[in-house]
Image (cartoon, rainbow, N blue to C red; front, side, top):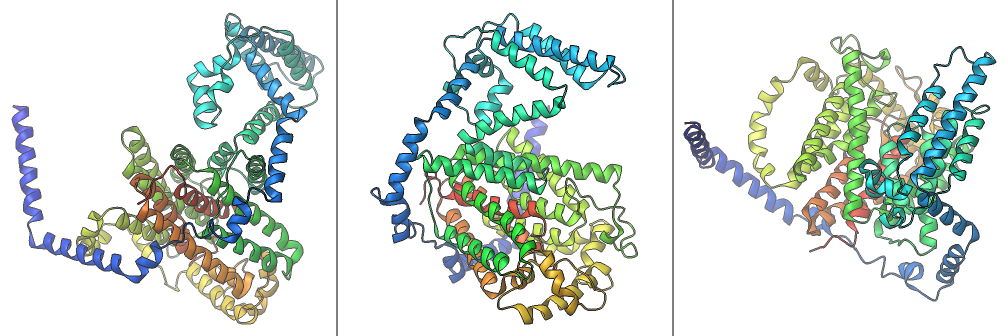
Length: 629
């Protein structure tokens, strides 16, 4: 009976689908989509955006000078450096120590754990006897007990540490699948038993906890191991940056980027990595030079501008690292996973803040117009607008992942996209909403022709869909441009003052940073906005800071980037990775749209994500593993 019911429902659904497809409205929608598709595809704009001189730079004199001349002096230097590094005593010593540690059997490491745990308990007992701690129930004591139990469990294992890591699914995933460590590096044929070394190391670590916090010691040991992995596998560093970006501060991120950039450069100098240069790379390089000269060296507040410019340049250098190092399908998948994982955690933080409540500055909300909005979530950031900027850059990628993946990966992508979208709503950032709508809509229209068929039905259904929106969201959207809103009035006043300032400084610019901006802004300030840290518009801000040359180089760079994105989307045969490139480009576009309403480069983490998305799009697009038409 159930089989007949299911068959009947299927036939009814097929009948209704055929009836709908044959309707006049559906035929009109399809014809409109065909008309738009043909017109856009045949337009000069489409031809301009999809035409990219892919090999022009590599075949140019500069490309030949940098990459092709084998007899060049620089090439000889790289060969010499590679030979010197391979024969370096320090490098061989590090390799030998690593190999030796991995070769020690688990019985030896069990001795080290027992030594660490017992000595640490003795240290805690001494500290309690001296009155330095109120009781023995301390984190150090708990860690000591855990070491003792782990040592007892490992005492009967006769395998080497490397083999144990390979056999463990979590460690294998972390080291081999994520970090990219070769299985042959961890594989050990003959385990060695030498208990003395782990025992000495464990005892020394426990004794050092008398002077230094144990957390610092363990963190330093983990950082030392991580630094060794990153110097050998800089690809892991890029993935780590993508994971940590929303949660680390500016200085730790800048230092991590600088270390990863240096690791990649060192690998390239030793002929262990390749480097390609495209027209977009020259666009980025031109903007970087302009930023250094006009944003830093000639700034009216040079001392304050140069540190900011230095951080920007480190992030731009990370663009080149990502563009040359994320160059395979496997790395592309891992990069997308890292972006979406960190985005999911950040979004869930925002959703949690909306549930439990968060203390919000009244300057973020006009309480008279939006009394129904209790608070605006900030996630791991300190400003809801900045949190919105972060979320909209990931939203097209989440939509893309949900479309191209299958099975569990699709379910995870859908859950992540839902969390990101929900957190984006709770930021109540109208500029972020506009950026997200523009980017996701353009991605869907370009992703599949079926979405063009929905243009006419969407326009017809739009008034009804708007009427179904909650009052808080509808009120927030309809307040765009309403000068009765204090936030809108404040921004308009700043824009007018910034345009007045631009009339006097458009030529040379004033230099980067809020210190340079606030040095001149009071002269041009209007009523209602006597003080402002920036122009609340990315393009006005860059024009004021870098002058006409700076905004021109920025525009040229963006044109080259989007030409690259659309060219790759048009010509790459693997549609999944072509769609990923398009989604990364739409993430950049989302930020640029919000840049019309705010200075989206005021937060360093957003600046880093901007350059990373560009670098990933370029790197995946020029990967040698992706076939082209």
